[in-house]
Amino acid sequence: DIAAFNEVREAGLAKLLPSKPRIGVGMGTCGSGNGAEAVYQAFASEIDARGLAVQLAPVGCFGFCAEEPLVNVWVPGRPLLILHRVQPNHVDQILGGLGQGKIPPPELVLCKIEEWDHLTGHVRYGTGYPDVPHWHEIPFFHGQVKIVLRNCGLINPDDIEEYIAVGGYQALYKVLIDANPTGVIEQIKTARLRGRGGAGYLTGNKWEFLQKAHGSDKVLI
Image (cartoon, rainbow, N blue to C red; front, top):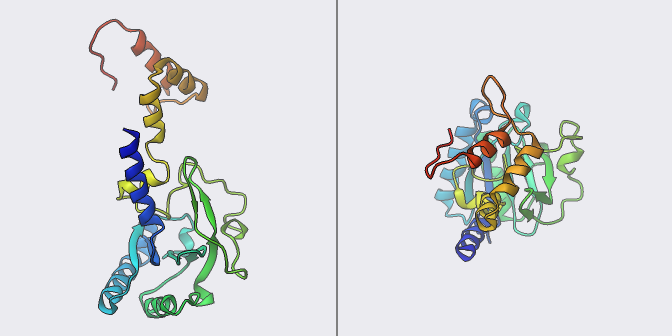
């Protein structure tokens, strides 16, 4: 049901781009190992104590492990800011600045993201902060093309609605609706996707053998 699917997608987008500021704390192993847990708890406590209209979410690692803890700060209509080496004692200043529409302390700001291509979903954060470099202008990221990890650090990996909002399960939906198993198998064969076993067998060939096998019940391991 595409209507139900789109309803979930819209719910996810409302979490990624809410009508209030959103803060995402990088909670990957590298972030947690550098104190992200304490940073997250500090944000949660202060937001609750002040009764602030701020959405807080755990996210994954954006990729620059040496600069952890990384924190994303977004104000509606403005770019997403990536802050680096954030500590619990920075939380008060960051939240205070949000309430006054100010940018976080310059020494914490690493880069900005105005829009992001999630491959099957596109998110436009906003424009502004002309003095802040774009993420791809940072030497560490320059030349990188994020593919498998393109969602990492931007969405809550525990929230299926956010995943669907950026294109999650669209390929599966298309496969089921198109009902063209032969075409799907040909795409997998063309991609030359291989198994992770010792033989590294071509996945497309496995699927094709199974499709052609006789019998009403088939099991793919």
